Image (cartoon, rainbow, N blue to C red; front, side):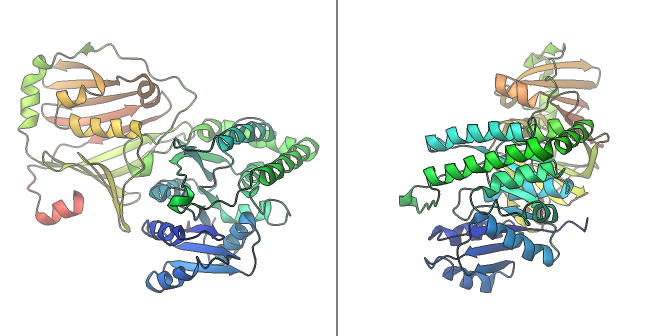
Length: 473
């Protein structure tokens, strides 16, 4: 495959006044954006011409008449492939899809360019009830069409496609040109051997008063979905099932089955698990270290509280069920009592992850990104921030604390208090000597973990104004 090169594809048909704002949000993430104007006649595209003049990464593709979402996406995919792009992130133009999740999805696609990265929606309270029930039926039917699990939500259109396989799988066919595109494209790519990765992402629904526009017609489009699944199931039975079984054996041997159910990549380069991540292994059992009495550790807590700002290099190993060897990242950590924790990743991709009292921020060459809110990632990130200062009071809000001291060496084990976090986050283990944290391990199971080895600090750090601006906020 050619060198990974991606853009954002955004089909638009009579989207209304929200279009410009959605395009601006997408552009802020740093990738090229191509809006496919699918025969719009409401004038919503006119404002994009002025935006294009000041944003060279924005391009417009005008279709002379409305052809449907799928046809518009395929037109955009063909044009992008002809220009050398290998992947396209598809997002709706009405603002339902989260622009802040773009970096995580793009990074996942860059790491696994042979896969399709599919969004698994986290629904708001105002989701229309009829859509929720329709989704359950679609998920069940797709389960049959794949002879098992793999695609968490076939209707959520926030996803990254490898463009060449997409066009090969769907381009020659007549179907998949309207609202059936999302489901048919995901299934046919899986039939062609392109494994799915599912990543969690929030979804928003806007009322008409908020500028929300929907062209979905409940009866018409659900009948279209019925016809789609009838076609797919018939084709599966008559033709596709041997290839589907073969692909599933290949995915299982490579660990892709558990990956497809979960979406196991760490969120956007930060040392915390992505929203909704899970695998087939059981969460680790609670260790047998003694429960901590904070008074017995008060001397160490005082030493950490008085410790000056420090700089140290680190190596991070990420273990996944679908990989035999870990993903290795290297960088420099900066710890400041005032400014928080900064992890400057230098390989394989340069970026800085900042964890402070305001949450997490990811800084790249294209700008700053705040990841979508997720309680599991937030709990892990808070733990990293507090444990590097030995703040037991703050840690005990989220975790049961177990530990052991042997001379200057010590170890802490943090067990989430909330049962849901205990199952999905697992445990956090921190080891060190005196006031030096030497190892941090975030372990969900025997198959999935993040292990960070921290070298001894290079000495007291006096962060300059330039350092604070670059590595903190």
